[in-house]
Image (cartoon, rainbow, N blue to C red; front, top):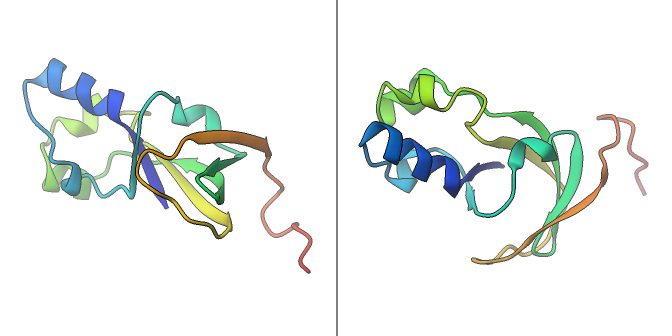
Length: 112
């Protein structure tokens, strides 16, 4: 799953004068009011789903091709967060993101 901050999109639009269509961003969730970089290597909840922040999304040529070439520069270290589902749950529009604990090392989780 991938997440991106609405505030980053708005900052991009203001700085560049270019609009970004949300469907072109290649991110599953658009968030507001939370700094996603801080969730890397952390568990957090979106609705009933528990996610684990894996890595920051890098601006890539596909992102630029689908939007504007300048995204490579203006979204550097701000392209969002890649996460994995740690516990399946329902996610609805306007669900809050709630912090969880530190992420376990991948592959070291206890399985039932």
